[in-house]
Image (tube, rainbow, N blue to C red; front, side, top):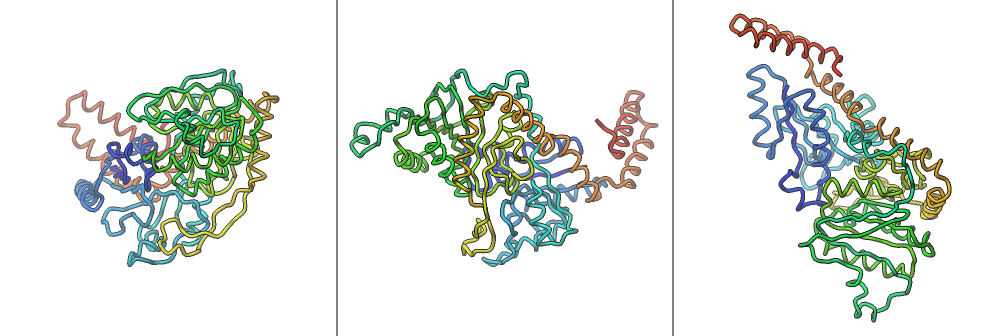
Length: 467
């Protein structure tokens, strides 16, 4: 079996386009790939219009099943390929786009789904949105990016302290450390280097920062209004305006720091004075540095209007970090009162994010700011005074994410998809096995043994008995 995969970004382009349109699909594909390779030979391509059907025709000529998984939004997924195609997409709005604009029928997603015959998304919420538009029997599967196995390794059952004893984070990039903002800033402060004294603004060298205490961390694109990071920042600074020893780390996921630097500084100035600490990090954290930040964090924070799945939140919770987050859209599958301080929310009217008309056609979720403030305050109290509850929430976070985004879950659901697409046809398998047996008379003894082992493995796979 051959599975063709595609995302807009690639290993060579992703670093320069973090925070750009559809950039996160690359990371989803990257997490899917090891699971897909258990079923098939995986081919990653750059130009679907040119490459997909060439591979498909070659597979068809030799009787090998072939499927194209396009890790792109449906309106950017091809419909006229000969190869069976499935759009693997994230969605966080109540309704699917069902209008046509710009002369492109794909803007009505029902057209795409009707042509493809099925789809894969990442949450129960998105599946409901698809089936509301397509009918309750339409084949739509929720298969989150399987990240749990990698990050659960960081969970420390015997040492779930809520407080960091102190660590140094070194990385390639820039930072602004808003520590010591206990006075109201003025125009004169700007002239005397208020920001410069707190910043490392040269991207061509490594920077280092030391942090300790109770640490709240959030990873987001500040240029994406859906992330609603102003509520996150405002709530933190108000909740802890008189508290030292507590830090908010904002890891900025956007390729152009200068484009977002001004808005970060502007908001901080509005919020001062405060005694808590706010740190904005921008740049590349290698695996060791990123995992260190996870390990030393007390909580992970999300205040988004909606999430298609939210990889950073999933990563931190898989590692045992309780959350401050709403339980709407994709997060309803894994954020609950056992593993998070749940922020309440309510629906508000909004347009589809890619609709140039900005026509009000769907809904997102508005955060209840008072609920967010209480979540910050209660979580701080637990971190300082209730280690048993913190440890239990940490364990519950790991367990919840295992049920949502482990490799075992992804493997089981992908097998169902492939069976539904006819990739595991019994007749096709038997025909292939017969070819192997017929060739044995011309094989060496060693190759016969290998062939027999291959056949047995194929049969175990067909019966669903592999480990």
